[in-house]
Image 1 (cartoon, one colour):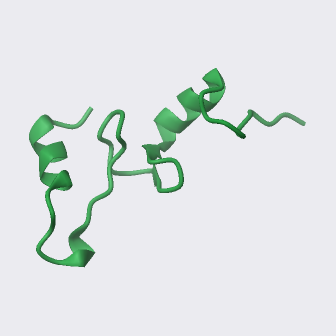
Image 2 (cartoon, rainbow, N blue to C red; image 1 turned 120 degrees about the horizontal axis):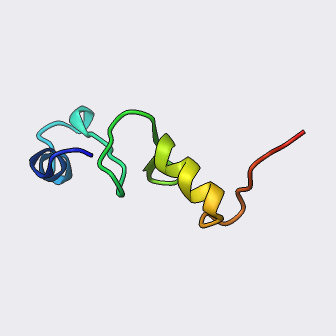
Length: 61
C-alpha cells in the first residue's frame, strides 16, 4: 500500500503532461497499472476472481 502523501502527490496536476503518474484506485500501486480498468494487476486479479469486473472471467483450457 502506498503512503497517503504519495497518492496525494500523484492526484495533483503535474507541471508537465509527461509527469503524470497513474495509480491503482484501491491500493495506490504505480507499477503494473491497467488503464482500461484503473487498477493494478494484483487488484485486477482479486476483483476478476470475485466476479466484480463485468465481462471478465478466469480462463481455463
